[in-house]
Image (cartoon, rainbow, N blue to C red; front, side, top):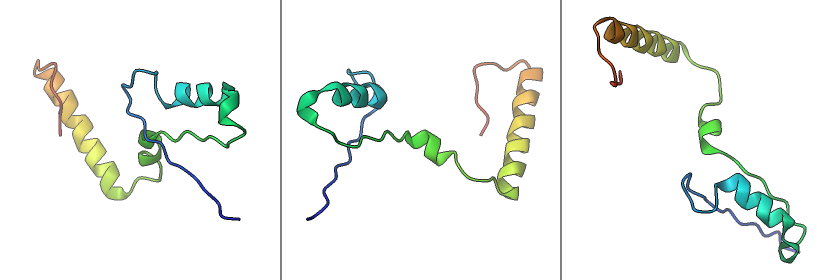
Length: 80
């Protein structure tokens, strides 16, 4: 008996309403059967983990630059 699986990638702006809605529709569809469905949001996975010292320093510098930009009257801009 060989295990089989599929990975389905859904873009955020799809017409069906995203991965969670598609998974819900498939769970309700009797033709789909009793298949284990899992939705993983890439953005949540990417943000996981503990920040390093370098991450913390960079975040502090970017935060300070954002505040400086606001104090100088800049709006609608991004620091990087």
